[in-house]
Image: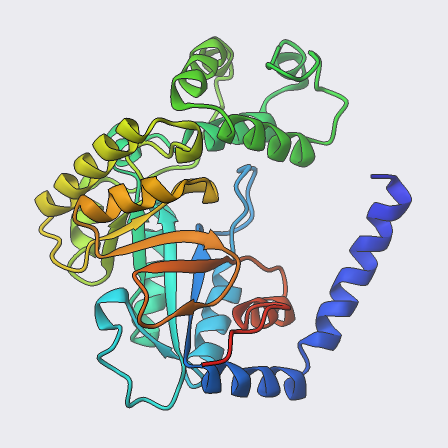
Length: 329
């Protein structure tokens, strides 16, 4: 993409969103969503102040404003409450967080509490136990903050050596996508190869995860699900891998004291139908994918919208499904 086209996008995107997110357009879209009897699921990851983390976050101020805007317009529920609030005239919406980062406990949970709302948080048990984020996030964090001298030493499969002259954010996203397309055993080997560089960067701080104690604490308030054991992209793993992954996750949730419904969110939107069936057979009541679309209240397999935004207009626009419209009832 040329510098000119990138600059044009930076100018035209906010303008287009502001036009599409005016109060009249949003009100009309909300009426359509209400009439469709659909379920909106927003997939979030982090609520935090800007940092060098390669994983972008929604600012606390925008998250707070968003909840204040959503609450009178949507019936914000967890998966456990599906079907129990059909008398509410507001359409249902679920706030579905993935991964289990510490800022959910430290920042998002207090904001949710002030609004009297609950969320679904799908943790990665292996990452909770190790205290380290998914491999792709660790690599993103390193690429966003490491000195250029260390970056120039990286020899990443499929990419030339010497990244110091490339835009860090674009590079981090590209590397993350490359990693997520690989089986977990290959991701782990790449991490092992990069670890000596991590060790030479004294100031390296990767995105922190919640502790097991914090997860257990929030389980008393919010709905805890699983986001796979180690954030593997299941479409490049064997079916046996998925069966074992679902078994371990189900056992982990049970040990936390989680009761029905059990929720499993596939990582990275990468899955096969027989793997979805395997997770269901393992005892999960709701299975989540990405889909970038609306879901149905009566379903057990759900689409979600990946959620982010830098402005109030953008968060409201994305909360109503961006340019997507729900199917007619």
